[in-house]
Image 1 (spheres, one colour):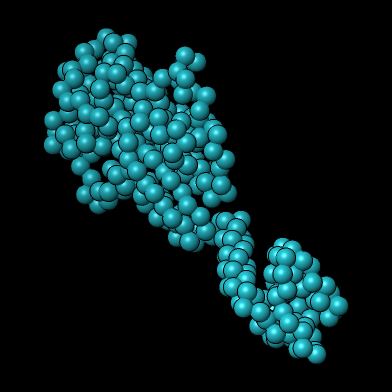
Image 2: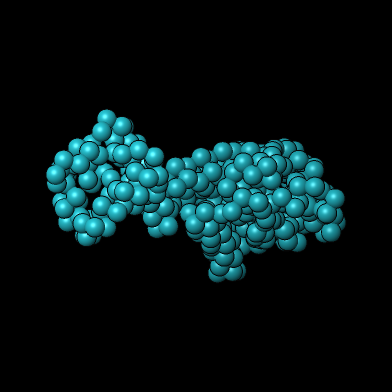
Length: 318
């Protein structure tokens, strides 16, 4: 029993005539009759009683008709769904991201992506960067977005072989209270912040170590006053005039987008440079759907665009 036989059988049952079924299916009457005969041989019983030119279905034929309709409808649904996936108009996308971008930038980007993608089911979760790697390595999410400051990417880490990563590198900025004497400068050096109260991520994060090293490089004290798990909360302390901080470009962009027209923080290029790395991670043994591939490509372009715009802004200010 195959699909074509079931289609012929359903047409004969619904029209009550071999000739009508042949006409509707654009096939010859002998081909329709042969298909019915083969179907009866496959199921091991007659499905129709022949009375002259009339075909009278036996009771078992009505059961087979209900099954045939369900099978054919499910196939048509599957074909429509696959067409939607092929055309990026239907599918699902499971994203897990670190807290900073999850506050505003990523949800805003995903909502616009969903609007363009059609019937798309979205799961958007927030976790720490190490947790993101665990989840993606377990093949539990389609895409992860994290920073590399906390990550163990050595060959000794057994998870390294379970995910793929696109690294996007950039340099950190300096965030100052808007009324700070240094506010408005295109470049702020570590030596300019000698004696200033500073905010930073935890000591285990690479930016903490790099920032401290930059201060030491210029022979000034790194006076740490506030630590946080991620950068966006530190900007509340910057607004209050209590600290300055060295942070990544996406956190600065998040603040700008959320505080248009009422910004109380000034951003500048920081020297010596403090590197920061973002990572777009995908599971290695879970093939990417077309919609996932498109999302990864567009999100990568967006992040690189923010970094590039920041560079242009600071260069023009210089």
